[in-house]
Structure formats: C-alpha cells, structure tokens
Image (cartoon, rainbow, N blue to C red):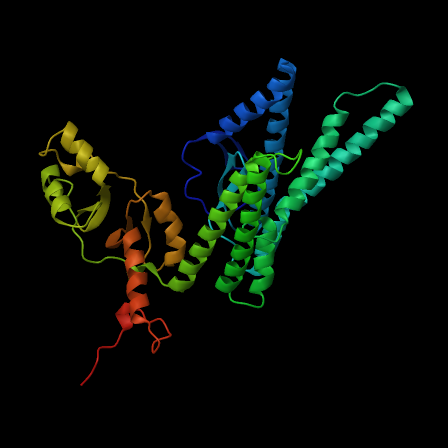
Length: 394
C-alpha cells in the first residue's frame, strides 16, 4: 500500500505494538474491524472454528508482509539521512511517516522502489522454499504442511508489488512517476500530474468496488476497493496540496513569518491574569519568561484545567509546561510545519540561545500565504516577502 506519506489522522486511535530497527509499529483501531469481517466471512461458510483462525492467520501474515514493505521504504530513506517516525497498520495497508520526503528525484525513486523490491524478494524466497519442500517430499515421500499457504503468499507478494507499482500517486509507482517527471518539470507540476492520475484510478477502484457490492462483476467481490479508492483519492489530494504550499513558501525562514507582537507572562503571575489575556487577545499559548529567558509555556488547556482545579490565584509556574516544542528563527518554514502538526494545534516558540524571539502558529503561515497571494497580481508574478516590500513613493 502507499508508503512514506504525510498523515493527519492515522495516529489517532492507534496503539503501539512493538519496535523494529528503532521504528515504532502502531496498530490502528480499524484493523480490528478487518479482523472481525474476515473472521465472520471465513466462519459463516462452513461454521468451523478452524476456518476462522485460518482467515485470521492469513491476515496477520499479510500485515507482517506489509510491515516489511514499509521497512523497505524506511530503511532506504535512513540511508539518505531521513528518519522514519513510525509505521501504522490500517485495514488498507501500512503508512510509514517520514520526517520529510526526499528532495532529490533519484532519492525519491529509490525509496519508492524499495517497498515493492521487498515484496519481490519475499516472493522469490517463498518460491525457493516451496520448491525445496516439494523436492524434499519427492525424495522422502514425506509431505510438508503449509505448501498451499506458501503458494498463496507468493501470489500475495506479487500482487502487492504490482499494485504498488501502479503509476498513480500516492502509490509507490506514482512516486516513481513523479520523480521521473521532476527531472523535466518543476516539482509542483510533476506532483499535480501524478496526483491527477492517482485520483482517476481511485474513481475506477471505487466504481469497481461498488459494482462488486451489487454483484455486477460476476463472482468477483471486493467492496474494500471502495475504501481503498477513497483513501487514494484523499491521499493524492492531500499530497498535491502539501506540495503546493511547500512551493508557495519557497524557502522562507521562520523569522520571516513568525509573530513578534505577543504577550509573555511571568511564572510568578497568577492564572487569573493569563485568563484575562486569553479572553482579550488572539493567543492560545503563552510563553513564560523569567529574567529574559524562556522557561516554559502555558497552554490554553493547562490554563483552563488550572483555573478549575486550583483557582485563579495559582502561580503560573505550577501548571506551565517546562518541556515544549520550539524552532529556530533560521529554520525553513516547510521543515517546521510537520512539528507544528505534531504539536496538535499548539504554537511553536521561536527561540535562539534561550531567548524568545517570536511565535509560529498554524494560522500565521496561512495568513502569510493569503497576504502574499493578494500582493501577487498580473503585474507582480514574483513573490516578495512582506519585510522587503517597498513603500510607494510620490
């Protein structure tokens, strides 16, 4: 399934089930729905418990293969200095979350091809094992259980490799296509073409799944194609939107878009004072500064909980967060955005050598892009940072 894509919802309702090569493996709650559906389908045909456990065993083997597929992406990306935060298993496959996408087309192509290469290697391994088992049975007359299961896994790996190599974004083949196009076109244009192809295939998948649901495709029945099609459609649009934003940011640094007019509070001030600032201003998070240095952050949630449990006279120091996300002023905005998303709506403090310089919030970046879009017109094709805009003369 599509790998190494940015995600917004997969970490919710997920449980960590282990770690491989330093990468956390998470299981999404919807995976239990798949197990229930497969179990009911397998048991209902002959009403034998063995069929149910056989179906579950196949699904677990399938998702072990998916984990190996995603590890192929992750470990290849690691060779290019890109860390993988985690891998999440969904009913429609796996999602590996990288810190960033490869910037060079060649790197993206290698990372994309690594997953299907793992599936092809597993197919060869299972085929060799199956041939060895058959040769052993021919020589000894002893049959080895599991040969049909191995044959099934061979076709599963070949199917996964073929499916992921479809030239439609965000499938691995679509990423290969984008990397190939990026050698001749700009990155945003290449992404839009790959995403459009991906969404076209998503419509075909959804239509095929709908037809199979009503028995219009004969014996073929796979309603999960509708879910896969929806996932591909959303993922393609999300990636294209992300690349457009990245292109619009155009290498801007945090210092160019951060908020420099904000309220800071002291750790000795009462929560009641921070509550007044919350009600009369735009801030959700308040930097806590002592002797000119940033020592903590008072979030809106901590403020509200502190007021309810301790009262308005409680010093801010008792409820503030002493560990908080921060960025440096020289960091690129596009690199800071993943950290802003991980902060789940909280602001990022812009810090240099312990000194607070500003605040970076999600709305800040959006407002900046809106203003820059308004400033650019037919007579202003080039982007001009606000701080460098010239005043009219005369």
